[in-house]
Length: 463
Image 1: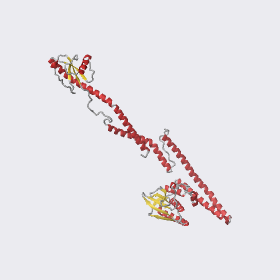
Image 2: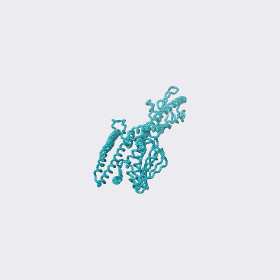
Image 3: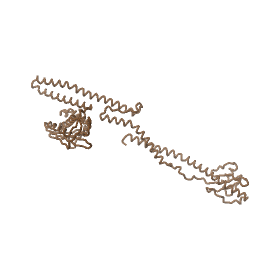
Image 4: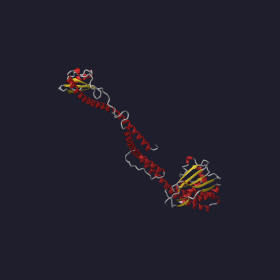
């Protein structure tokens, strides 16, 4: 449940199931009482119908027996039972009891029925009119014991019949509905997230596709705001890159004229001016190096990788190590190189050399005096090569490890200026590695010093 989609889906689904369950149970159980009453009424009517049929048969036979015997004493005291166990009694047409065992309540009900010529008022009494053999009218009656109908699975609290099947259907249908609803609601968020990730990776041209433009909902407005922000950032970055490129080009001409003027000044100046002129020449060289690196960085940010060819990384790393070791010996430092295999990739040899050289020279600059910079090359899983450059310097604060690859970033302003760094070398290395589909990272080692790891794919790259 780490994503907005799963959270929305789960809570929508849970709310739908719980509310549906509560409403279903409430509605069903509110109907239980009317259902039981209707069933009881139907049962009583059906019972009365059956008793009426039985009483009709009983009344005819009892009336015939009464007329044949001719007197009440001749009528048996024990009356026959109806199908439900109740006893039938015979009455004259005027309601006079012919069966002495009838209860007073039954007699009263029969009298009311005889005088009113309609059904008795009592709910537990059934009275039917029959004719004797002589055509004389009689009344047959019975008083039964009211009771509940036989048990049938019409439902009982709290679950109705087929409850679990209905719940399964509700579960599946609500799940599909909630899934579609959650997916639709979170679709703009997913698009926005993909756009943000693309922007973070440097794709300034990325935009959010707004399928619901003009609807005015908050997510659509957020997508529009993101597009405006991305467009503004793209313009600012492009303007920044163009400014750096233009300034770098424009500085080349004044620098060239400065070098010419410096040569003329050396011819016309006295020997006492030589230290100042040497300082001017040194700063001019540093300025020329800075302009060159700015132009290189500008080209790399534009995606220019140049021609690609097969590059032997082991041979290239050894060459860089030898050149760096020659320079390091002048400041009592060394560069050692080791490799376990000859690894070949397709890329721009000059750019790769420039990137590796910048990382190694940066390590030489900051490693402790009398120590060595260790350069190693090894094969990694997934057809990748890993170049590691390790120094024995003071390292970099953990919070700044990801920032050292930004242009003009300096860990310590005074120290970096004193060392002669321009703050662009590692940025160039990061751009070159990215153009070759690799990654570059830095970490502080527990035993001291900084390690920069460059991972490059060995797969084939087209030109």
